[in-house]
Image 1 (cartoon, helix red, strand yellow):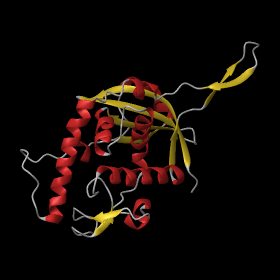
Image 2 (cartoon, one colour; image 1 turned 90 degrees about the horizontal axis):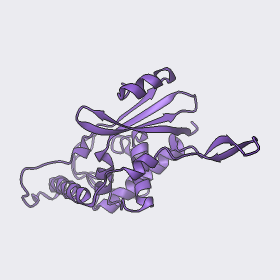
Image 3 (cartoon, one colour; image 1 turned 120 degrees about the vertical axis):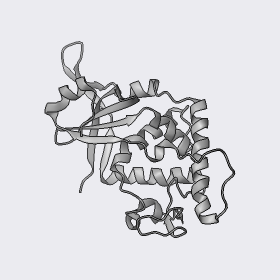
Image 4 (cartoon, helix red, strand yellow; image 1 turned 30 degrees about the vertical axis):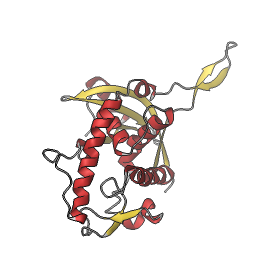
Length: 236
């Protein structure tokens, strides 16, 4: 099956309940629309989880690339026989009993069982790149048809729809540091399932919200575009 290109058409800030979110609308090859909605805090969580430097253009671009392609990733544990990261040797003992694996069994590396966040990042990016090659590649428009001063049609660079997120991403050094502490605490708790040694006490056990954060991702018929834009609600 050939890879499909989803072209981003617009990005808006919306609020769902008490959660500030980003809504990214994309146009599919068949002309229909696809919408991805994620909590604004997701960007800061990814910076913390995968030790990405959000202060550089490359780092922020990597975070956005992760978030926009994650909906197209199969579960690496459930589909471990086809996992591209595991195929490159990125495996480690499982810290959880799930999908037919027992604790300690060899499993694809994820944030939950990686020896460090850099290794988790390498595995995650391997899966992102495979999704872009084989499933869906989310892209920004490269050109827009315009006219020259003489009235002739000409292609010109299109505005970047993601610019609004790049300039108002809301990621702070303090926020990343706080989330990093929570991520490492949760990882130590999971590692204790293998070592049998409880991690140092740091108050009540608390798993980062990112481990269960909801991300909405759905196809939206073109006829619903105006309704979705005005209501600020994601498609079911």
